[in-house]
Image 1: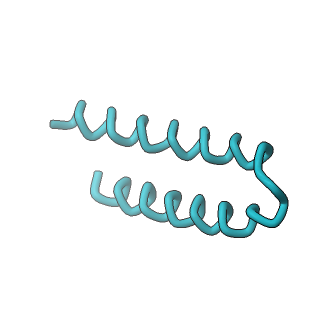
Image 2: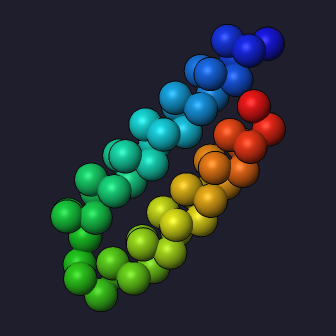
Length: 52
């Protein structure tokens, strides 16, 4: 079970990093919404880590 959790955390962080990288390819007007989405994803990832 611990391995599955570690894999899930790694997958979540990879997805967040990809989302951050994709901001460069979006319109500036979309950045605020993208930052809020990433912030939410990071909060969720940290919450998941609290359960470890």
